[in-house]
Length: 144
Image 1: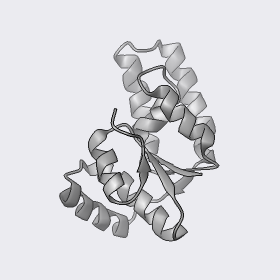
Image 2 (image 1 turned 120 degrees about the horizontal axis):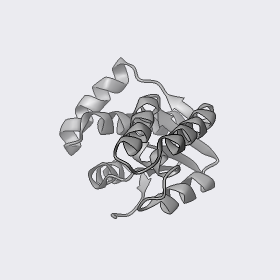
Image 3 (image 1 turned 45 degrees about the vertical axis):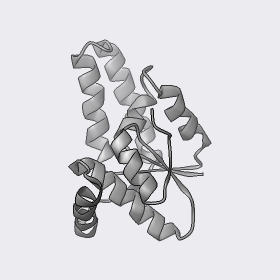
């Protein structure tokens, strides 16, 4: 299975929080994991925020950061370019998405175009983005 992971899904791999097992299950089933290069600073920011909000100790944050940096090269990355930004623009207004959510969906759509008729699982934990991804023909987590 090919799976596109947005930042909310990737962060769940490292923390015990609601739906973490669901995110990890998709990760384990995927033989190809894809994300936008945009996920790199988003995930690191979420890891830092978890520490700042007291959800983990600084030593745990550093361990999680190292784990993420170790697996980051294993992803297939979708690079952000002008064409992708134009598609994100359209998706923002078509589905009422936030900016970076539209970039993630546009990235997954580019992946889908490159792969032809392949099924791609879109893993994220935002109901609005999941709804938009389903409308664009992706398999997603059900509402949570």
